[in-house]
Length: 542
Image 1 (cartoon, rainbow, N blue to C red):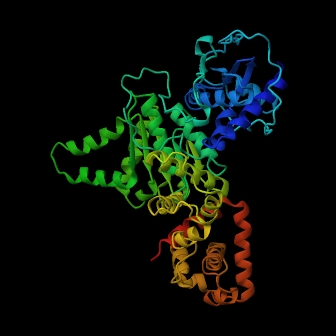
Image 2: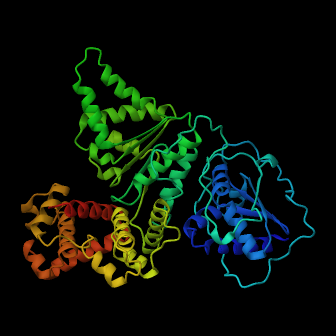
Image 3: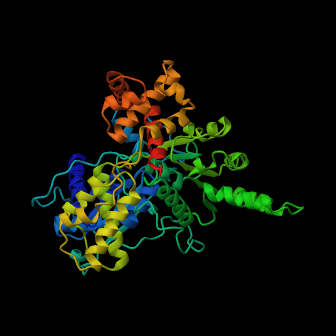
């Protein structure tokens, strides 16, 4: 079978996999884009991945789904084999005419052998049966470079899977998670640190890069240039999920490594407790420090809570230097970029020394995927079988929820409980609207005033109120004033004339100020982050 035909058949297989209701299409696109079909016969399909992580993940979570798709398309039970080809990514890039990234730190690739089918094939299959199948283009690459150090492609790395003849495909369920590594399993953690894993993280355009970087850190902890890794974004967008997923993956695949996850507020509290114990030998303090210094991977969540905690910041600085100098991995998260956190420059410079990535609010498509994921998770935990929400209810929740994923999950749970425990399986969309009428945060509190917004912007930019409403026109004053006017318009929806009076400006000046910020928001990341932080601060006002 020539390469063009082989790729066409693979695209049809991918489309079939994505059509299954129990499969997340975004996950399929992310992982299958890293697979390349190498050979196909009447009952055998050979694929290669560009690294061990992709190979192992697909083997354990998608191989039987691929077999299922092949059986649905052809009526034949296939054997599927996956091997690693570390040169795959470089060839893709070269074919696209792009500069090749630095080669992975691995042994030279071996020549690829001709795969041997699990069963002898009578003849080469030139095409699949011609029954109607939704056409699909090959998935686009989800990531720009290999995730990790890969091992050369070897015949011994091939693992073949086949579906038993007596399996009832109509009742297919994804296989139970298995160890994600080929390492010895004797000392693996029996339970994950949390239920938050890479598998149940819903990938979208808003978080794809952050997900990719988190996976690479999990696969190769301590490896440059992603040490440290700093993930930032608004509350409820998935930062903690990715950090816990890193922890769970490392604990499962590398049980000899010690991971430490801690929230910054707990870090401060424990540090204060250790310092308060006035033992002569300072054992408590030494134990505190040793606890973190002995970690192979330190995950510190919500580091913005260290603002104003000078001694805690000094301790973090020392721990950071100790760990990274030993090649140990540090992962941090915050609700804003490092430059917008009140840290001294030595800490900021270290946070920016590795990978820094933000998570944007999810688009409607991603929120739909999250709604489905939460529904499936609830159904499995409660033993509800194929329970699901109707398409119009899913869309209503996705379109009306804000950016906070916790709020989204709460809405899904509320609707499900009404359906299950109040015997309302036929709940209508109008009932859902009424049920969730007060659930979504939506707009701002009615008690919010222009003065509230002025005060928070003044505090943020260190500008006096007299300057905010006065005649000064220096850039250090004008920009905060324009941002305050913009926020008043967005959050209070007052007429421009009324807003202008509060700033001692006329109607046209207020319009110009708001318009100027709107234009800057399209291209200026600094302004975007400042607005995001200020909106969060203002939203938390009583």
